[in-house]
Picture 1 (tube, one colour):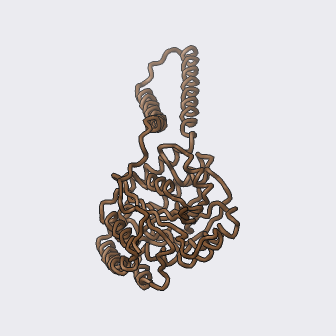
Picture 2 (tube, rainbow, N blue to C red; picture 1 turned 120 degrees about the vertical axis):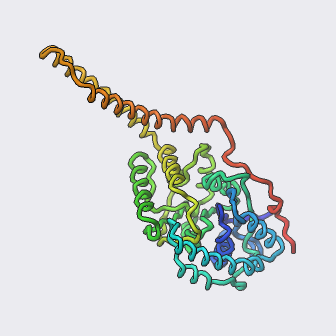
Picture 3 (tube, helix red, strand yellow; picture 1 turned 60 degrees about the vertical axis):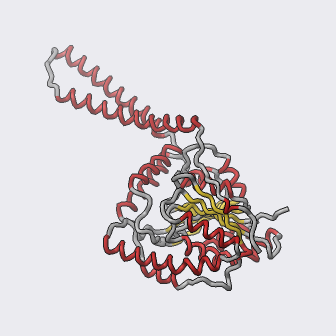
Length: 392
């Protein structure tokens, strides 16, 4: 009987060509210190891999999938060190060039710190801590870009571990928090089911983006019974019991941050300072963030529908009162011929409100329509690289 890894690390990837080699280098370095504890807790042999890396390529347009395949082949050939030696320095050079370009052109909304790149570059490949027997690598690729939420779901479905860690490949999520997460989880005898990360500042983000993000959390928490802390990332460790609960949620439109909060369970927060990432620009445009915010509000709150009813009732009541007032006024003073401007303003105002409320209702109806079509949330390509056979 094959012994499965006890920890799964799920990594959604979209255009991560620059950061992938450094990510693999840092994650393997970080996890090497946890082998004895995890194996001891679960009774694994020293030769058994105790964690698996699950990369989900979300229809990347750069060389992300090519690098993932190369990484997987190197692993099967027991030559991950060779892959890292070949690609880590190249990745750092690309990041430096990207940094210079971004600062020269001032087109990016994300802050990029060259000192951070230099200090990370100093962390070269360490063959002493790299143990290929510690982990396995599995890669999955979508037929097109289905979005990060779909990539998260795909990774969670493929995860086989008793504990699942979710983090991004761009190193905004600091891998050095992972040992602390695992220690909390195991020291509590898996009673603490969720250990999640929360960044304490928004340093490095543009002021407009930081402001809009804060307002989103305020509005979302005001409208929904599910509360989301500001600054909370998808980066977290979740027990298998939590993963099973999440996978039982079958909605088509998924908003993971709220879903993580909705399932409950005992949890603990780890705070950290924001680490700027090294892409030339964020793949999250303003429009994507806006749609993501609408998704979050509509997915976990029916308050907008209640608001539509209440607002419509108030408008009707005001109109009725005004009609009674005009009726009484006419009886007392006669039928004066009023001007049209006030009438036009009232009609256009009510018409605009009706269109807005129809839009709110339409958002919910659209989600019902998408759900009942029962289309798959994502489509996976067949990849031969995922065979479990490894060359000696």
